[in-house]
Length: 133
Image (cartoon, helix red, strand yellow):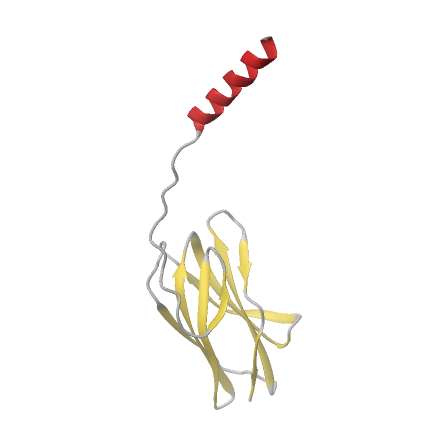
């Protein structure tokens, strides 16, 4: 009997601790999706050769719990350097367009990775995007 009362009490306590979770309306996700998770969605990634450089353009469809966006570039997927950094003020469910030019892209093939730093301290890294001049 003691175990039954303890079990019922535990269920009542756990049930009273739960709360209803409401979420913000989801952003509309359309376009050529390159990467998507709970924090960011990246679409329409494109690279254009501009002289000796490369102009990388992409759209962020939403950014949630993100404090910084950084762009990494390099001649190989596993040899990347930071080339751009932007602080992000708050959550966004509106499409944002980015256009970042790497002035001296010295190799004929360039790889780009977008890194988002979350407010929790975690990171989000997209897969590499390959651009061939």
